[in-house]
Amino acid sequence: RVYLDKAKFTLPSDYKNITYSIDFNSQEIFEEKISIGKVPTIIDIFPITAALGFPVIIKARVETAGANITEYEWKFDNDIRKTTKNEISYTFSTLGKHNLTLTIKDTRQKSSSKDFVIEVLTPQSQINQSIIKIKASLDNIKTKLNPYPSFTQQGLREELDLENSEATFEEIQRLYKNSSSESEYIEIINKINSIDLPATIGLTDSANSLPF
View 1 (tube, one colour):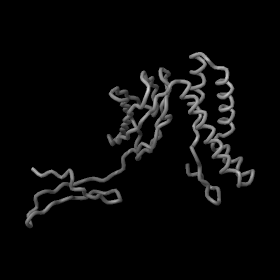
View 2 (cartoon, rainbow, N blue to C red; view 1 turned 30 degrees about the horizontal axis):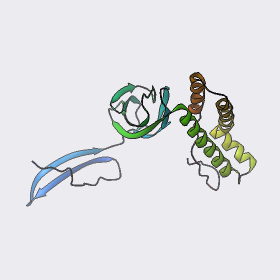
View 3 (cartoon, rainbow, N blue to C red; view 1 turned 45 degrees about the vertical axis):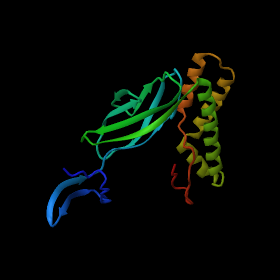
């Protein structure tokens, strides 16, 4: 038996069918046909923090490979859930860091997986941390937009839905100042999870694109 686990074979950079073979003393001892093709890709998930005891809707951002994704398998530590959409509602019962392995599969039975870590905080800590992150994101985006003409800024603000995010953020801060009950925390956390901002943006000189 030949073990090839540590052979460190390299693969071509393009998609095609190839044949790998191994010769020993001019005699072929191994040959295998391999098909190198596209698979669906998991880009990231949002959010990566959650409040203890509160349901959180986790969404995945994926890239398809020419076929619809039919299954999302979410493995929270040892708890496995499956959905047909790119989101799931989950409630964590313990504080700390939890492992999430997300596996996606498409109609051609092609699949891929990616590991994430979700940090579970107390509701107050979750809200405080989220407020700091949202403010930092908004400030960063505004700073990046400032050098551009007003009409360009307006177009990019609309593209990023900044006006709605800013209004929601102001409401979150107002509600949090007067909150003390579980139902109020739930309302605030739901509003926090509705804001989806890039941590930063990069603008080209022509401002024709926004790489996040």
